[in-house]
Image (cartoon, rainbow, N blue to C red; front, top):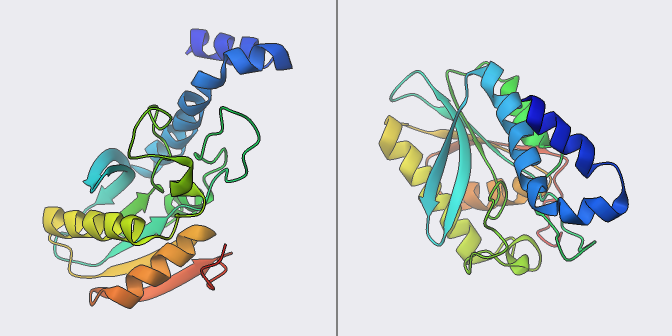
Length: 194
């Protein structure tokens, strides 16, 4: 921990050093997510979902019951540098999920978020968090992830909660699936054009 804090301090000293530390930006964002999820007894898991590995934090206590599923927002979507990172600095949906007292709880990142290899992985391009963020490929990835969760924990039905662009994903999933019993949008623009 001491070395981690020292590295964060050194990386933050100047703008010149910041570019040298950009590879650690994802590590820092992952550590933020881990520290949010841990006190809520949520365990990290990667779900294979088509060409993506969706990062999830889960807390499952009641097999066969409903699960609350939070879908994260867009993250950083405006290209500000060559080292753009779609992983949010402040994962709002994860914050919300950690306060949910449901027995069965899942938080899902968006494709390319919380991945240390997103810049070199052919299945993860800037289009996946930009122009194609609501494409059939992305929606299929979430359907695959929900099917995985349903089978793994014998989940009967889902309550979907989406933040920002995650609300659009949640609405599209609710429209397609028979096992979604409620949909909640938090700061989501549900016209699909964001």
